Image 1 (cartoon, helix red, strand yellow):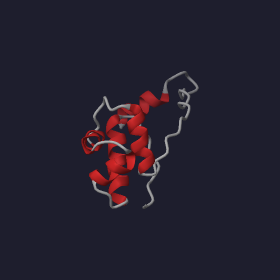
Image 2 (tube, rainbow, N blue to C red; image 1 turned 90 degrees about the horizontal axis):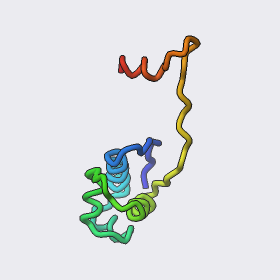
Image 3 (cartoon, one colour; image 1 turned 135 degrees about the vertical axis):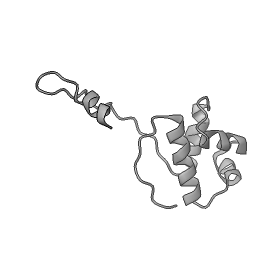
Length: 95
């Protein structure tokens, strides 16, 4: 399987993008991935499309089948400047 960059999977769309990228990198069809993960092809289609109501256990099986490992990380602490201003909010305004 090809190397995949680290990415945060914070949305269903991000999960779908990661699954599709990993599947294509492994030269798998949706049907082949579905068989490897023990799910139906339609489920793979839905995951890759970022369907927000996909069953978690099945999503984890799909991630495992394409070699993506889920990891829980604590959220970054809120960054405040010396005057108490939320620096993340300031940066977001200019992004």
